[in-house]
Image (tube, rainbow, N blue to C red; front, side, top):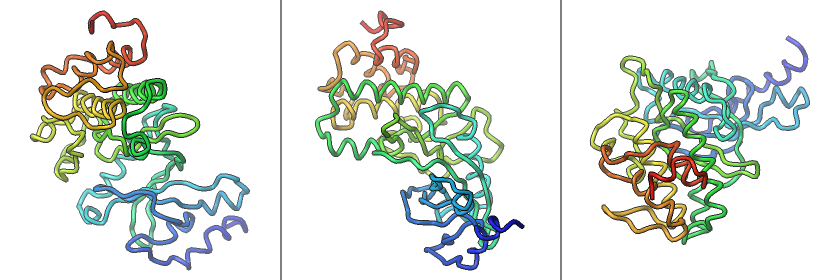
Length: 288
């Protein structure tokens, strides 16, 4: 083992516990703090000690592990790897990048590493804009978010949990992340996250909450809820929500269609919605 590699891995002896997650994972990643936690997992900020020893100036990464409640499930590691594989299959500047899937041998804890995002999630942004975002800012965010979701669907990936807390705005643009509830078009037999009942009720389509399957239409409903909230400052409520105050009139018929509670009436595609929000002429005539 080279001197550099030995130095980076020698700190494994200091593998102190932070709750149930070791302070040092795989003898290489030094946990610094929790970035976020949800029903399926916990995300930490960590330093990559190996990269530091090779002089990398940006050695910080994000690390995701499963939440304690589901770590003991028989297919826990498979669930986490499935999320990693789904995200790895996506190559888009508005989708978070993942790096590697690993297992910490001493603790038998599976985890994966990904780029460390530094910005503001949309739920935090909404706290600063209680009446909604001005159209000039909203339009750019909406187009990028719809483009990211379109790419996911084109690659056969359903997100499953599109909500403001899973979208971050950075200086370089927007990032969609957290595919923990997502799935591919072809799901391995017996592998399903639906049994954890972890859908976010505020953004989950009615048919999903009723026990239906994840689909492109359920993702469409969720992203429409996010766009409505960004334009109005509040989540759409009732059968006939009012037009958002920050949304141009010509965009409302398309967004209202995407918000239909009945999936049979949700007769618009992500492409068409993006065309309207993006103010291009393609597909606009249908919504006037």
